[in-house]
Length: 308
Ligand code: GLU
Image (cartoon, rainbow, N blue to C red; front, side):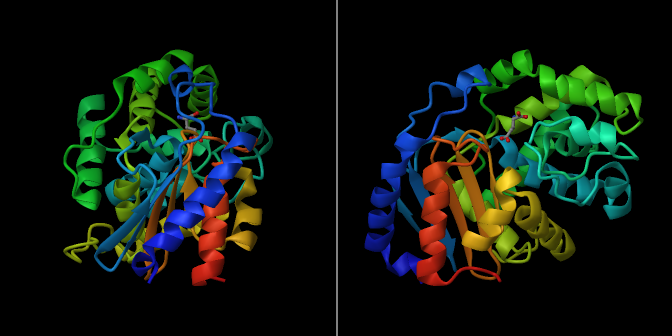
């Protein structure tokens, strides 16, 4: 078990930390600019125990990792047929915020739920009468997954993204024109940016990763919190599209279903075994945490975690 080997985990973090100088903190959302480039922490959750290294109390926003959770909720709300009529199942090979395939593909529904266009379409399917109610439902779901009822969203990050989200606005307008999205653009952008600004720490992330790894059963109570078939869909998207347009290389080098976000978080789910949460805000050019990817690679090799 990884959790019996805490010293190894500490050394791995120390080694991977040397890579942060090769990365850059995301700055296209102004409020993310202030993150400490050299921060690196990890929590590993398995069979009711958790091991960690680095400052795991540090909070960060989910950003794209939230796309996995909004997809779970949208699938529970609407069923597969409805969701996949408005978002596809194929990887793109393009950057997360690209608009190009919306125009070149017919029908112009986004290719998958992990790119921004797809995630915006998915978020528009979360049920509820207002932004507050829909965000509240997502937060309640996250409280259930983590057992941490204090999780909320970071208002400053949400506002900062909302005010600068012109590319996401363009994606929404394009999809509205093509009938993929049917709601008010600003309402959707408000919900999406608040969803992306939900704030967690590594331990929360490791617990969510564990539920997804554990066929949707709660980490402590073993109660079903995500239906089995949905947990499988989430893991599959994490493998095929979870690490942006580096997902293929990541599958070969690491082989673990994972989802990253531009705040530097990575959530990983080793089926039937482990949930992992990482925070390392120094990103490579594709938007993945440089040190976080390295950490997952050495962990995967040492504990034979690849699913392939
Ligand atoms: N909120 C971010 C955006 O839409 C999420 C991007 C990411 O983490 O990949 O641009």
